[in-house]
Length: 483
Ligand SMILES: *[C@@H]1O[C@H](CO)[C@@H](O)[C@H](O)[C@H]1NC(C)=O
Ligand SMILES: *[C@@H]1O[C@H](CO)[C@@H](O)[C@H](O)[C@H]1NC(C)=O
Ligand SMILES: *[C@@H]1O[C@H](CO)[C@@H](O)[C@H](O)[C@H]1NC(C)=O
Ligand SMILES: *[C@@H]1O[C@H](CO)[C@@H](O)[C@H](O)[C@H]1NC(C)=O
View 1 (tube, helix red, strand yellow):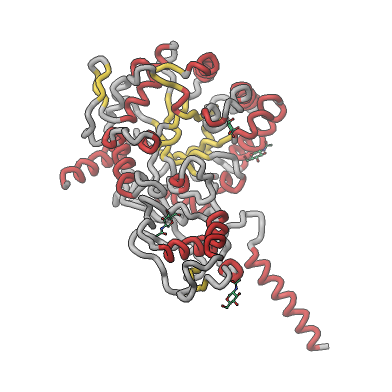
View 2 (view 1 turned 135 degrees about the horizontal axis):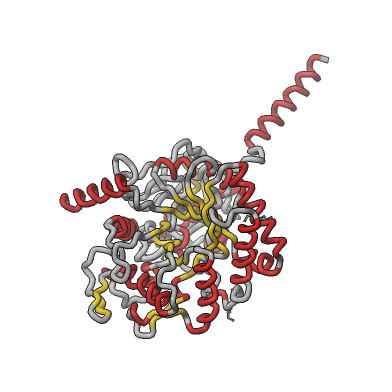
């Protein structure tokens, strides 16, 4: 155990000194209560995270990143691909408003534009097959026209299912048969533009979707039975997956195309394999793996350029992929570290929490002690609350799995109450609920207190508006009194 820590310390010292390896993070904002972007930028800086990947080009987010020096990958959502594919003008406008303006007037260090997000996922039924490549071409032309062709590179973050291996061995890697020609065209285009290939790699999903997946192979401890690929041994799924891509690129004549790992990480809740212990084991293992500078068997000594998925939990993400989807953050929704994680970038080796986060009052909405479990209003109330709030911490293998039925109901009520900013009306489940000042959290199950909503730089917060209104009313009353 102690040796392990010394090794991690050494690795972090080396990487800090050489400065070769820097880790990035994905900053998504599909949350009911996203943090103020300036708080997040400070969180990034204090934790030495020098690269950030966004999923859109939100003005306040980019503005907050101005002058931070942090390298930024801005994103174009899939629903904009059709417009950008069919109109060069639209692409020019997008670049002008969402790249040029920020680079020149806000001093944002934009380095990449991510065109689409996993557009070729099989669950999209081919919806973006015809628009992704033309959008990529138009955005690239617009960047050149704006004089940004050298400093800002285009890329398409792709899911790892754009390549496959018939045998399962990396050396048989090639692009997926149904999109082979399209992938080749995109790869050639990226190569000509000296732009990188971006891929998202998820050992967690392999474990989640395949009960027979060997658990140790998802991690980096070297405990798994190695996979033998013609004399090359693979001890973890990440290396095997990365090298499957390298083989696919080599086979098609583009073996030197730079690769960015656009997303990699492990969720902490919402599934039996999504927990703090596994997330820490995976993320710390990954950091040590890439800090070692060993690369992968097929790309020895390669610098692995990666963005953790993700920075902060997002409680408004769709749970279609699974309940774990809202729990990918290294930090909780309010910017608190979930577990010990040494990025090799801070003096202490510990994550630094967000500062100046404002919380709502310490109060919770729970089931009334007098309410009966068999009250016919219970099922309706719970499904209403969970439909609009977040109940993904309930159920088998989750952090709140040990709650009893009353605890479950209270959890649902409280989640709704907090997401509704603790409005009194949000704790009026008929004869069932009550507000308490006693924290109902138990063990690993945390009943949240929400943070104050962020209204954006341009809009005045209602708190202020109310105060202003109060002042006006006060003044009127004052005048009425004196006349
Ligand atoms: C800039 O990006 C934002 C956020 O993704 C988007 O809503 C907006 O339409 C874009 N602007 C233009 C001119 O395309
Ligand atoms: C894809 O097709 C399936 C089956 O036809 C359908 O249920 C699903 O909604 C479609 N998904 C999208 C994103 O269009
Ligand atoms: C609590 O809720 C979860 C999710 O709905 C359910 O799986 C579990 O069985 C419930 N537990 C009890 C004791 O009711
Ligand atoms: C609440 O409880 C009271 C008294 O037991 C009862 O009269 C009333 O109908 C209940 N209301 C609802 C909505 O169940």
